[in-house]
Length: 434
Image (cartoon, helix red, strand yellow):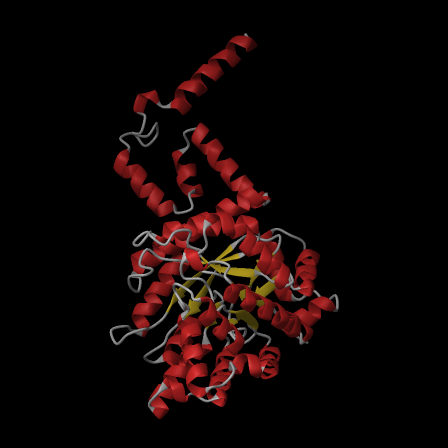
């Protein structure tokens, strides 16, 4: 039986027990969430040593970081360094989105390098392989695509990102309605190019039962990617985006009926006033499936600072009900990120996730902030550094800017509000006691 079927039959597996401990919830809470489809558990039995991660309703908001080889200058070792940088920054999961080079070697190295759950987008390799074998990615066959999907699942990939709901009807609708940025999804754009060139329906939609057979066989989580995600604020919640969500909702039901866990990936650019509507629409149409959001970016104009724009959108999305944030780096829209930008992207998303968890009332998140407040009140610098979301950076800044590590910082110096008010309150307390 698959994990989903175990949950429906009242069986609590070892993986469910592990994530329950990490989340601070009961095993039964995890089981029921998986049974309903409102929680997915990333952790393939074929990924040796993987530490399972649960994503969904009532749990802490998770973060994913993407790496992968894209050009001739990229190397497996270089991308593994970026991956380990993301792990050091605290990412919960990773995606290998390699489109060139030794894609098989990259995936195997990634799986061996970390116990974090790893996802892929198999279409990338299927297109790349077709170009090598037949001279053009447009000559990819349906069998080519499904062979790659099964290979990724068999090797231990924990979740597969697939554009299952991007149909010819939706492509035609997008053309009729006239988007400003027609397609910003790399995978979605290439899939649609293949569909138009071959005058064929999306093979992932047309052969969806075949996909479910593979997912069930390897008990791998499906992540429905959105080919029509808006690439600018003006395209947010347009007809093509919503139409695709409707189709994905139908596929969510089919996947669950087949005993396959599924989550849905969301939009890229969304104005702040439309974020809550977008999340609630997804939750309604996709029957409560966990929502994996790319950002979203809340402005089109933050080039060089898109990790900040995405953190704003991510925090609001997570508070509205999204459960999984795909990081965005400062290099978004200008190029591939370096290690520093990968680190900054993860940290920005982690801050957004934590802020949302506090607002949602998650006890662990609230307690963390309360302990930090108490450490500040007590001028307990070591405790403050320990509780920081990035202790290394916090400690470095503190040491660079403080003359006396046992007292106040240089922001206020001897006029430290915490110190003065604390002394005054203590004085009043002492007088009252006397």
